[in-house]
Image (cartoon, rainbow, N blue to C red; front, top):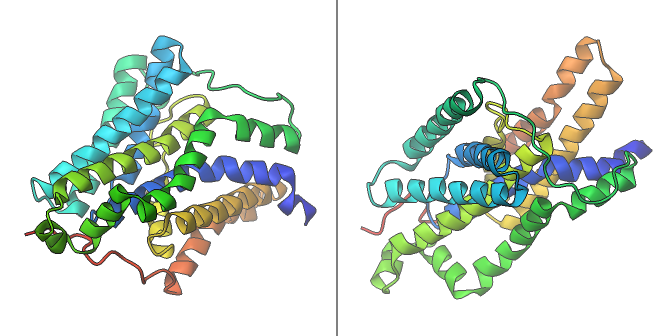
Length: 302
């Protein structure tokens, strides 16, 4: 029982939860602006690939981080343009971006590394002690630049959305785009800005995932963007709650790993892999988080 609340478990939970939390808070930003963002999975994937490709080519992890975030912003902004300007259904656009991300990263792996599965290894950021104790793991997690940026973005999001002019206008176009437009607010511009912020935060999750694995693997997002969308709904479209739910999911996944190790070689080892996902389905089935959706979600100003 003590191992479930140990420092090592906390470090593992933070490591696992970071990509989910970044994608979920990114999803909150997009949907608070009134744009359904099914493409979070694709943003995670392309940002992970770009960060590894640039880090591998340049030898600079910082350049890889910047490149990954920049491509995440570009993909998310493209989604905003397709939805708001071209009037493509947000779900269709998101699915198309996910499929494009999966195929483009596979093509990139083949073209750059002559591999259909993974890239060469990269160093990643290396700060803190190198030991394997729970304390060492936690210090490394808390000193990681990508983790620190993710924590800062997640912590700042509730304040920016509720206390700043930009955040209030983003929420206005998400609640009632027609009224916001009539009041002189540029719905398209604020939605584009919100989707850019969404892409940047979500991309931090993709970079974290790739740097944590020290390479890019085909399809390595592994459904994290969709789990993040569930967290957005369950949280009532509130960034702090969405991040907390992702932290709980990270703990469940860390627990699943420990259960799997303890029952290695048995049928139970396979069944334990379902624990986090069954818990998510159970919470959704209870109907939690259905209230709080922006009233203008999926609506245009005219």
